[in-house]
Length: 286
Image (cartoon, rainbow, N blue to C red; front, top):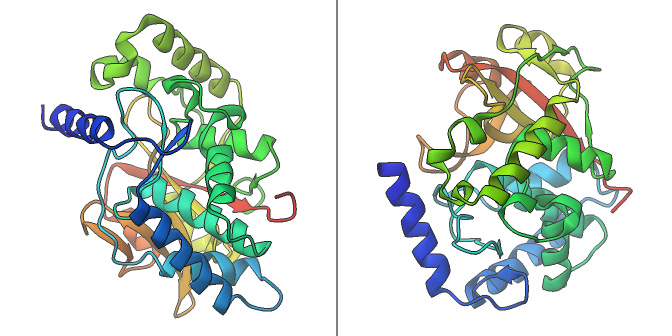
């Protein structure tokens, strides 16, 4: 009931706020914050635009922002921009998009909107609820196919991740938009397509062993033991005192933060966590 009320409240906010383009909703505050962020990132960008520095450097500008869930849930699908509140996925998306723009010294807000749309929506088009990529493993698969990221899980020590992904359609009562049969069928088809792919993960007991192969700035997707669900949380890899930590929008911490403990220990604290998938942004194709 609490989750449903949260979704309904987010929907009401979406109705009240007016979209400012034909496919995106944002406020003047969002636009102002974007302009400030991109200027700061560009002012500190290293001469060689090194991947391992640019993404964590971009993420640090979002540290401290409050965690809020379900900010993308609107009655009618429209691409939501929200620089005031982030969940774990919108944090990762915004860091990747901002870093991508900074890599090529783009400062135009419209370029930001286009790039966010490319990452968040299937085929880079806003075409209803089902066009948004809802499963993060699907986000990785889709954006790898488009040349935006590379799934490096297998090559750095991953093993097969055998699981049927169907959480949304098996729990459709938690997703009001799935009451529409056509939308339900489209989500079910996306699940079926996702399940045709071979997935890999690094079990949480082996993360300390392979963390030397993780680069700063890698995208970390935490796998879980919830039936039908692939990923329960996402963040960015950052190295502190020689160990990989997680920069993320934390539900428990209620803000964007860096985990106090190394990633291996962070995963071990929660029995729901089973391991990680790792993706690496490819800047050259943007």
